[in-house]
Length: 256
Ligand code: ADE
Image 1 (cartoon, rainbow, N blue to C red):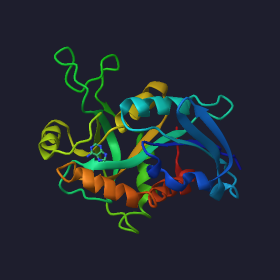
Image 2: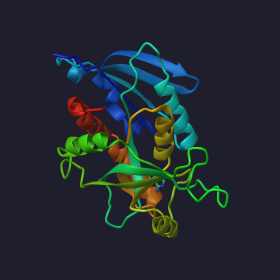
Image 3: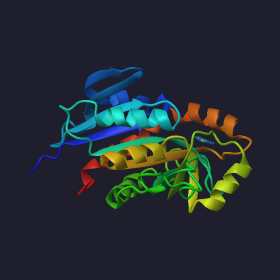
Image 4: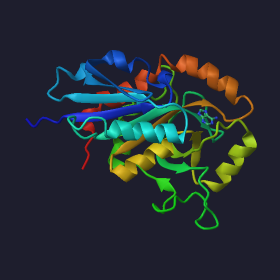
């Protein structure tokens, strides 16, 4: 039987968004690169299987620069580790669609930086040099993600699983007018957050498969700050379930 040794990176903006991951790993090695703490270990629940799943994880802090730098550090952390097969960024997001409420899960099928605007030299949202505005994860990663989340949909605290566009910018959005304007310009916009598209860009540049998964914490409106704070304190004990359902199904991930 061929042995498939996966190496998965799990990144979030805040520690609450990866919560108990550390307790689920064995043979942990700790790294500190300036202010970023990174752990790498073997996922315990998989120890009895033929596959060995290495997980390298960290939280980045908020925003595009923090997340891009953290993703880069994960990718190049240790040349002795196998190359990262998939980088998962997970955490909470504001809803950009009236149908999406707290505890709905959004799988990003397209990521865009809503504060990128080099017009009139380039069209709005287009990143110069790369010449693209949307980053899309691999189809096989999306398929596997939906399969994995079947066990979470409408179970425990989670509600519906959606896929659509996630927009990223260095801005916590708490104004409905702002969302309405973004929604009118960005196709199939479902959620807003502050890190996903920068991580997607790093992975695109460095040819690492990636996935951005968000759980709705607020509606990016006047109540966003209170809703966000209340939600995050509750989410902390549940965020592991998102990661776990993906890791449990990792053997079904077929990357070409
Ligand atoms: N992350 C969670 N809620 C958010 C919001 N309203 N704006 C930006 N990022 C968020």
